[in-house]
Every structure is written in C-alpha cells, then in structure tokens.
Length: 124
Image 1 (cartoon, one colour):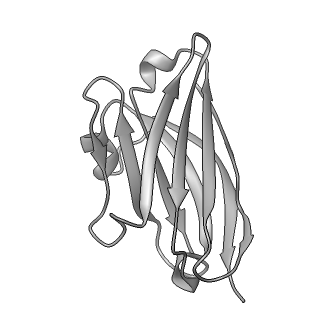
Image 2: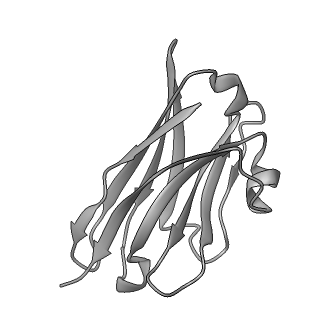
C-alpha cells in the first residue's frame, strides 16, 4: 500500500485546513487509515483514525470536535480526509498518514504503512 498525503499549508489561528491521504495498492491491508503528527522537538502523537470494516472513528479527547475524519472508497483507491477547524498554533506540526489493520492497532501505534508528511503551520 502506498499512502500520499497532501493539503498542508500556512493558516491563521482560527482557520481551517483539510488534509487528504490517498491510499493506492492492495487497500485491503489498509482497513484503518489515520493520522499522526509531530511538532518540532516533540514526540509523535496520534490525531485520528477511521476504520473501513467497522465504520468507526477514533480521536484523542483533546481533538474531538475540532477535527473530523472521513473516508471515501473508490474502485482503485481509498482517500481519507482530515478536516481541521478552529486551528491553534499548538496544532503546528508535520502530519503523517498511516495505515494498519484496525484503529485499535493504530491507537497503539502499530502501523503497517506510512505516508510522507505534510506540514501544517498555524500562525498569524
């Protein structure tokens, strides 16, 4: 499975961005697709996840309500979107998409496939 992330950029505090993660290949192995982020000098943290088979989503408590994850399945690819609203400077980070068997696995940082990062900068 190949993952391609896009959609990062510079946004002012309070603004919105939508990140995309396109999965190509044997997407059966990408049942759960989600996002991590890593700010400069900080540890990587989980952001969100969505499962295809269970139809479930996962958010760490601090982000639920501001971030919304969704999934679009087509014949040849799967695309996962992360809509981020009310962005704050603390959301500045490189965002990575990842795929694994389940959101439970992703919550435990058990990841089978990683995409490249996309930089989100929240600044005035």
